[in-house]
Figure: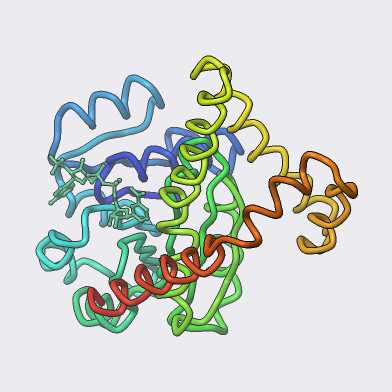
Length: 265
Ligand SMILES: NC(=O)c1ccc[n+]([C@@H]2O[C@H](COP(=O)([O-])OP(=O)(O)OC[C@H]3O[C@@H](n4cnc5c(N)ncnc54)[C@H](OP(=O)(O)O)[C@@H]3O)[C@@H](O)[C@H]2O)c1
């Protein structure tokens, strides 16, 4: 199996790095295609994969094509190669907001199609990728997609109708989480901590709490109650949070992002 990247920017690099590290494929089984020589040179020097500016040659050589260009150039890029797709091709799009129906229209009726919504944390191999399939019975494609994106984080299959909510939560989520972190860091600096120390402590606290909750499977409400000892420090802070509109604001934040995703797609 050869995997080609149509567009070799930041996200393609994160996926590529994951599949090479997990040894899903060897570098000689990957072709990176891009219009930027800088990106192609980096892909070659860092990952020893084959590189090309010629999208048609890449599509002819690869049975799996990861479409990783920006959504606004996608139609143009697919127009160039759509006649080269055969029944043997699996096309995996990671473009935000581009639905399966759009992709089918743009790539013709040949390739099997998977739409994935990854997130930026893929770059730290801790991504969240949600995918949906054009043909839900295509088990080998399901397994391959799970292995490709599972190489750099968690993977979940959901129906496409949920993708606006997915885009809001895990797609845009890294920015929202970073906002909350910034608030905690600024608060700690006001309490006298140096910014770099506060930054390390806040980030590690968020990472550790996420990992603990995920691994333990504990109910989040029950966990919060358990760490709030009566009249203790956590309870004092939680009292402020509980009497604020932070939870409601987060709900509105997610709703606005999901609404925007609906508008865009
Ligand atoms: N970044 C995220 O957090 C994120 C999250 C979820 C989904 N996505 C999706 O991931 C996709 C890629 O995003 P990215 O952040 O990796 O973008 P990026 O870093 O800009 O990478 C896209 C690459 O495609 C190249 N390109 C442009 N036209 C091309 C063509 N005709 N043939 C081959 N390559 C071409 C670009 O080159 P030039 O720079 O020279 O144009 C660039 O190197 C997007 O569709 C985005 O919606 C991104």
